Image (cartoon, rainbow, N blue to C red):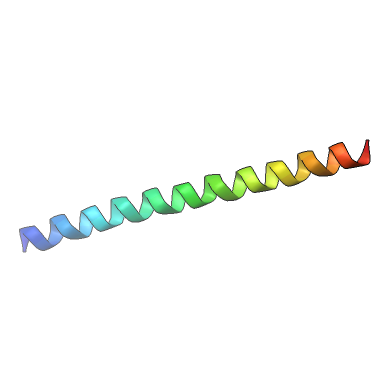
Length: 42
């Protein structure tokens, strides 16, 4: 049971890291889109 709990914790940690990376990646895309729109308008 202890080994299973450790595996679950590792999976949760890796999952949270993946979600965080996706959020950062999407945020960078949004910032780039806004910046490009401003540059195109000027």
